[in-house]
Amino acid sequence: MNVRDLIAKAEKRHVLERDEITVLLQGGDWDEELFAAADRVRRRYVGDAVHLRGLIEFSNICRRNCLYCGLRRDNRHLLRYRMDEDTIISLAIRAKEMGYRTVVLQSGEDEYFNVDRMTRIIRRLKALDFAVTLSIGEKSYAEYAAYREAGADRYLLRIETTDAALYARLDPGMDLAERINCLHNLKRLGYEVGTGSLIGLPGQSLASLADDILFFQALDADMIGTGPFIPNPDTPLGDAAGGSFELSRRMVALVRLLLPDANIPATTAMETIHPEGRILALKSGANVVMPNITEGEYRRLYALYPGKACADETPAHCRSGIEGKIAAIGRFVGKDYGFRHRI
Ligand code: 5AD
Ligand code: SF4
Image (tube, rainbow, N blue to C red; front, side, top):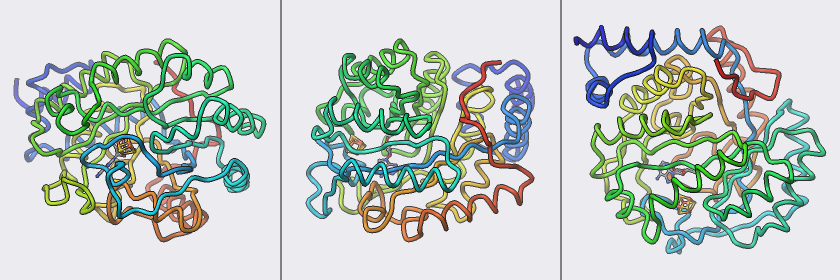
């Protein structure tokens, strides 16, 4: 099949074979057609609303040691912090005033935030009428169940890569099968489940990115956040090449074509490596933005990778900047909770 036929097939039937995805990931003079097809599917399935989720990075302490990540436990160059409960809630109240209806609580795998503390925070956020998303890593089934019981609606846990050998190399002490098991547990508990992968990891092939997309389909992921790997000098991968913007954009488009009704964020990492990164992602299939609502020095200290977009701005500034750009491309900010609607 020629590439134009592949794009047409993906737009119409939302299925592609592994080799077909790989060809489209390679890129070529058909790229603009790929992005346009993804944009049409986005409009048909999820409409013109862009859902904003307020991101609170409440602890940068992590027991893991992922080779690509600035929060890895062996990184001694990072000042660590942990917000107290009231600080988290006051950030959420400010988010509410700015119009957010979802907060995303994100942290490293910080064991200080045990079931007791987390469930208390979740309940307080639910009392404020938020949709609550957690992004706090691998936990036991019982912990996931307790958070769900306390009211958590969604959970983000990127698979990072479905290439088992690459996963084992980059995430020492972690196991791909265990991560997949976590995602299945979250699904079983009725969370809306978000996953995604890093693009351009050293040794990652295009075929393996195609496998990632097939994995998202098989899992029936509700949200898929993908973005370029950005080398962090405070990590063992500081000198690696990093992912390209165009490949990341093709990935967003293919994810939209193959999971047409999913929620797909235009990620901060995309904005970090391209000045119009988020807008271009929104025009290539994405329909969600997660502005950072962490305040003050904490913003700088949640240093997954260098140069993070918006790191030196205030939450209000960051939000109004994004809202203006959304309006400028003829889209609007969603007023509801932005749950996935299956079609
Ligand atoms: N570049 C881009 N994204 C990164 N993450 C961690 N380190 C990096 C990096 N160097 C991503 C991981 C994780 C998410 C919270 O941040 O995919 O799931
Ligand atoms: Fe910790 Fe997540 Fe960073 Fe891995 S990617 S070191 S688990 S914060």
